Structure formats: structure tokens, C-alpha cells
Amino acid sequence: AASVDLGFTFKDVVASALDGMPLIEGAVGRGRIVIPVIGPGRVDISVSAARAAPPGGGAIALGGSSFAIANVREDVPTGVITGLADGAIADILALINQPPLRLISKLGADLGAVGGQAVGTLRLRLPLLADLDVGDIDISAVADLANLSLIAPGLGLPVTARRAALTVD
Image (cartoon, rainbow, N blue to C red; front, top):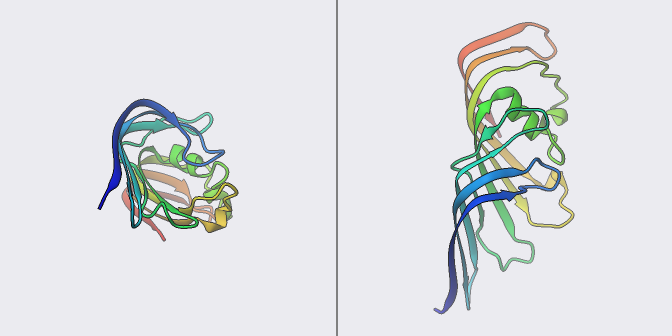
């Protein structure tokens, strides 16, 4: 069947994943948009290098991240952002606590000073709406943590671990 099939590459792009979130900078990658005459069209963007930083925080490497729309012809298409992050745990937590997500604040936990490094994947599945409500975003995450240190919320006890794993679903 006939279709429009557009492949492209990009370099040094500055973009926003969600309104209000810190900008993604220095993005390098490739994309593909396929729109058939009949049937669903699709968008795939993969990022081989990029970085983002929360206000006042350090840079978080985002290489390996992606964005996809499996069917652009849906009345409200669904986007899937898969963000691979490598950086200081405190910076990653500060990044995902920025509006509109505010994921840490919604937990009601004061994580205080958190130390260590993380390599992880955050997956956001969301309807592509101009007036997106954060409650409509399906969120999951997995991370490998190294040299973790924090004060346990609600207990006030120090927690340290050379290695730890985190899963949020």
C-alpha cells in the first residue's frame, strides 16, 4: 500500500518533553514518520545523546531515550516516552519533581538529601492532548542505584546501600 515514509536525523536539538519540564538539550538522534494511505500511521524518534538538568542541578544523560506514537490516526493519539537517565539520584528526583509531573511531591515523602548515582528508565504513556492532566499519564520506572544514601521517610533513620534496585509501577 502507498504511504509517506519520512526518515530524518537531528543534531544539537533543544526540545521539551512536557510543558513546564526543563528543556532537553544537545539531542542527537533519528526519527521516522510513516503515514499509509490506509491504516494507522506511526512516529518513532530515538535519541542517541541528550541531557537535561533540573533548576540548580547537575546534568542528567538521556542517551537511549525514545518517543513513539503507534497510531497517529486515533482521535486522541497515545505517545510513549521512554526516558533513559544516568546521573545523580538527587538530580533525577528533582527533574521528575518538576511541573507538571511533580512525582516526588505526590508521594508525600520528604526525601531530603539523597546521595548516590542512578541509571534507570522512566516510561510515560500519555494521551497527546493540549490540556493534558497529569492523572492521565501512566508512569513506570526501573533503576539501578549505586552508593545510595538517604534518611528513610517517616522513620528518620539513615539508609545506605552500595547497590540497590528500584521499581515503580
